[in-house]
Structures are given as structure tokens and as C-alpha cells.
Image (cartoon, rainbow, N blue to C red):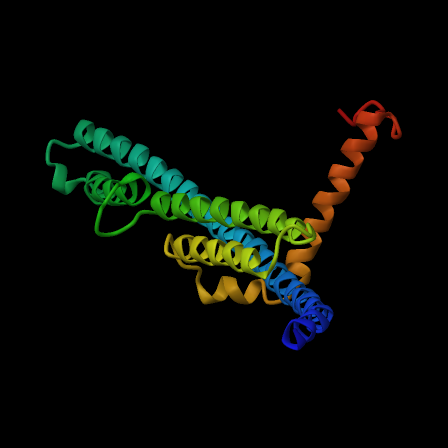
Length: 220
């Protein structure tokens, strides 16, 4: 009987301990989720930067290949007309040099090699990685909202976080980011400013949709 009464007396203390633990766990996991969200947003921006850089390189290579190809064909044509001896024509020699160079440039811009990723391949991988990091950021945000629901406890927080970490590992294996690009995003401003600008833009959209902000000519 006495042991039963002691157990009854301990229930409030146990309840307080559980409540304190859940509160502490909430704080810890909220911080972990916030860190994961920031990491994902930052990684997405770095990969977007790399994708844009490789797309730009591809454009320059294609443009150079096209120019060199046209000039080489023209040089060969003029050389054949002016002189029967192709090797004796300066323009003909230029054509001989230009055509292989154009082939190399064309291959570099459009080739699909399995052993040496092209600029297009690299850009595609970075775009895929950026999309993955953006999805992870949105998923983290949703779980961060759910931890405020009293129905969930630390066990559920841990399960969600495990899922996020596994997704992070999979996305990280898609393609790496050069150290030079990582340094570009060492300043948190580089991450916060675009996000803030996007939120302001979205708020304007909501205001226009609700009629709070008038749409004038030129705004769309």
C-alpha cells in the first residue's frame, strides 16, 4: 500500500521531468532544423551559381565553335579557288588549322563523354543539386512547423531529422562545389538578402492580389 502511495506521489514529478525534457528537446531540434534550413538554402544558391557559370561557359564555347567553323569553311573555299595547291595558300592553311579547332570546340560544347563530364553535364548536375537542396529546405521548414504540435514528441523529432540527414547525404553526392564558390557564400548576407528580396516580392504579389497595392501601367 505504501509503495503504491509513493508511486502516486512521484507521478507529478515524473510529469514535470517529461515536460522539461520535451521542452529542451524542442529547443535543440528547432535549432537543428534551423541550421539544416540555412545549410540547404545556402547550398542551393551555390549550385545555382555554378550552374549559371557552366551555362555561360557553354554559350561562349558554342559561339567560338560556330565562328571558327564558318571562318574555316570560308578560308578553305577561297584557298581552293585562288590556288590549286591547297598547302600553298595561306587561307587554305588557316582552314586546315581552323577546322580541327572548330571540331574540338564543338566537342567541348556539345560532346557527351562518360569519362569527362562536359560543361552541359556539369550544369545539369548543379541544377539537379540546387533543386534537391531547395526541396530539402522546404521539407525542413514544414517539419519545423510541426514540432510546435503538442501531439509530437522528441522521438518523432528524431525520426524527421534522420530523414533530413539521409536526404542531405544523397543530394551532397550529386556534385561538389568548388572551394572558390564556397568562399563567395561565406557571408550570411549572400544567403539572407536573396531570401528577403523574394519574400518582399511575394508580399507585393499578395498585396496586388488582395487589392491592397494598385497595379499601375508598367507593373505587368
